[in-house]
Length: 282
Ligand code: BGO
Image (cartoon, rainbow, N blue to C red; front, side, top):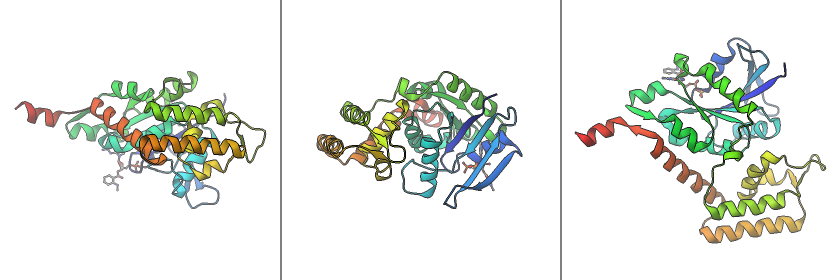
């Protein structure tokens, strides 16, 4: 049977370690990622040992600012796991979804595990998982890892996502049209790009959106991996500058604001606060 790799990604304290332990049991190996003192943990799924679970460091974002973020994003972009399991703390949904949106831009099959549903219940809240799944354009599994709830289901859904190549690009989170136009223009130029390390290699089809966003954000670490002519870099810079003028903001903030606006609307749509509801009607 072909080996498969599933990457576990989530904010610190989302329950990632608990899920990793529940999935792998004692078949874990622990070391460090090359060149950094960031712990690397991997193990095999207890119920099917051709499935390798890669536990990535807990992160809030895929920016290049901390060693943990760099390790996680390099693995997700270059290591190409077959799918991402994104575990989110349901009792802190708004904050956790910021990473989810970045992960969706990577163009890999992805399943979101909404963990801590027991805590959500205690808070007298409910999360409408179907609406959340619809809004994100990807499968969502309700979980309470400490109670064993949703653990095998999340692996099953990941395998289905791999089989159906269920990437968000197909369904797509669309930001403001003015940003989308800029990204499309950058993608047009990116078709000419190759890699510094492999001059004949082109960007794979599912990665164009991620690269266009990183170039739009002027992410230096990513720009340095790509080869384009000076004229192409200049054209990209012009696209970014024009868009910044249109929005009246810098490019990184434009993307951050678009993500937060999307999340605010989605959470409003999906989270029901029964406590507030009771207070309102009484
Ligand atoms: C402690 N429900 C509840 N209620 N708690 C959960 C769930 C869940 O579904 N899943 C995980 N936790 P990690 P990261 C702890 O360690 O897996 C708990 O950072 C404690 N420790 O048990 O470590 C989990 O890997 C003392 O809680 O997360 C852990 O993502 C008192 O959430 C915490 C209370 O989980 C973080 C809890 C000494």
